[in-house]
Image 1 (cartoon, rainbow, N blue to C red):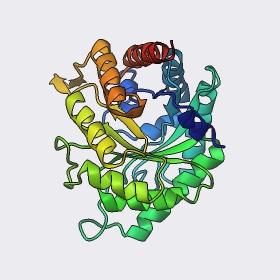
Image 2: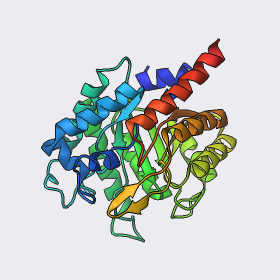
Image 3: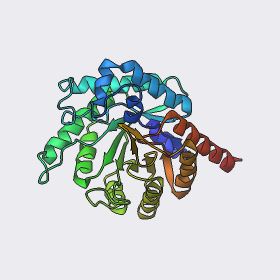
Image 4: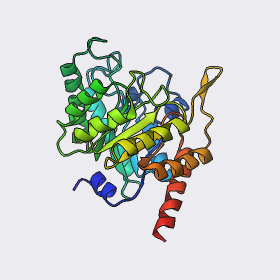
Length: 299
């Protein structure tokens, strides 16, 4: 059995990592730059961050490949190295995971950055192929699962899952960003998303990024009510950012993230981590909360 599915089947709640982009911006990544460029230019910075999440107690860390499709990499210095970028992302994450015990690696697959027809220039078939190319490279790099994240369009998420299926035997998480409370910017509702991807055989349905912790918890509850047999993945932002000059500041504290983790697990979440603004300190706090709960339920 796949290691990730085996862990899910054990009944334990898993801790996921925190943010990649916002943490790398703290050590020099320019806002708006292709984060994946640092897989070539600054791999030590990425490895350092991923190891910090492992040290904080993450059971699952994601690769630095959120924008790793050929479509999203357009304009990058390494736009012609899609396979290399994704393999490198998987390799660095595997190296970081090896510093912990049983840490799993999820291949991050973010949105294409362009809408599908008829709202944008990308055909459904082009989207499938872009995601398939990325999924195959991540699979070849040795990831344990694929995480299609920060989605807002049902059609693009379906294309992503279809592409991900070309990486044999890897479970797939499909996670949406609900930027309008409990709706995506395309108006998608949690119950529709969960029903759709339960029917398509996704390993988990997820919510990441988005707005507030309260809204993320509300989505978890709606997922659980609509598709009670489909495990739930949740990685909210550390709140909505505010600008301090040119710097985005996230105000949710590690303790608040720990409180959220307790509530999310109670509502049905099986994997809990953080998205934008979530540091290793946030992961340490939520990992402590989850481990306290585990100890209490097994005592």
